[in-house]
Image (cartoon, rainbow, N blue to C red; front, side, top):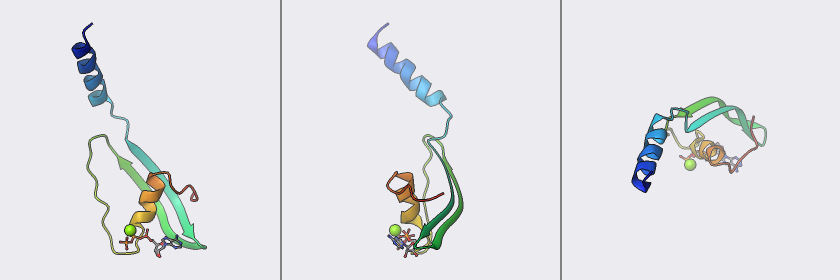
Length: 75
Ligand SMILES: Nc1ncnc2c1ncn2[C@@H]1O[C@H](COP(=O)(O)OP(=O)(O)OP(=O)(O)O)[C@@H](O)[C@H]1O
Ligand SMILES: [Mg+2]
């Protein structure tokens, strides 16, 4: 099998993969006892483009830190 054929097969397999890129549940995130995120369910599909929009202090960076694995202190 040629390299090109293998690559084509690999690209097709990735395209068929419909498992979510991200599947996150955050029940509660607290800072110093204060709840800053609650009842978050975020799924992102492969190839999907998602914007996180909200007023200053609503928790966008907090959520992104959790998504990036920088903050595991939540449930
Ligand atoms: N390290 C921290 N310790 C305590 N409280 C924090 C900490 N980081 C964020 N907070 C608080 O958590 C809440 C969410 O903050 P966050 O930075 O996630 O908001 P944001 O949506 O990213 O805001 P901005 O649009 O200004 O960047 C705010 O009330 C903020 O003061
Ligand atoms: Mg921010």
